[in-house]
Amino acid sequence: MPRQTLHQMYDALVEPYLEYCCEVWGCMGLCQCDRLQKLQNRAARVITYCEDYSTRSANISQDLGWVTLENRQSKLLAVSVYKCINGFYPEGISAMFDSTASVHSHNLRGSSNNIFITRPHTEAGKQAFSIVE
Image 1: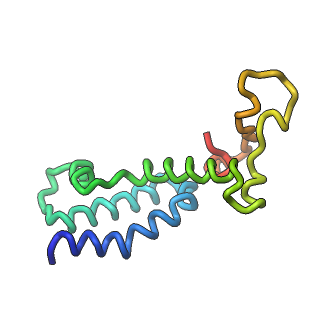
Image 2: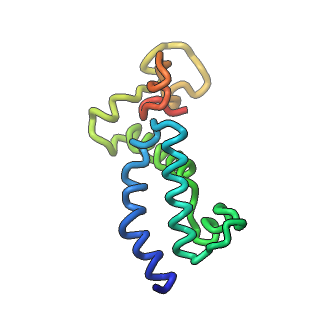
C-alpha cells in the first residue's frame, strides 16, 4: 500500500483512540504507557516501511509529524483544564477546580488567577485529572 494510504488508515482507526482516551490513560502506570508508545512506534515503522531497527523511533515519528504520547497527554490535559476553568465543560467537571482566591483570603500575587490544588493522599490520586501540576 502507498504510504499516504497507511497514514490515512492510522489517522482514521488508531489516532482517535489515542486522542479521545488520552486524559483517561494518564493515570496508567509507566509499563502500560510504554506499551502504548511502542504500539505508536510500531505503527510509524509500518507506515514508513522502516524495517531498520537501528533507526530511532523518535526520528521516524518526527518525520511523520507525530508527538510522543506523553507530550500529547500533557497538551490535552492543559486544554481540558483551560476548558474547565473557562466554563466550556459541564458543571460537574468544572467544579473540580477552584481559584485560590475562593479558598483563602490571603493577598498573594495573582492569587485570583491561580488554581487551588488539593494535595492527594494516594499515588493513584496524584495521577487523577483534577490534580494537574
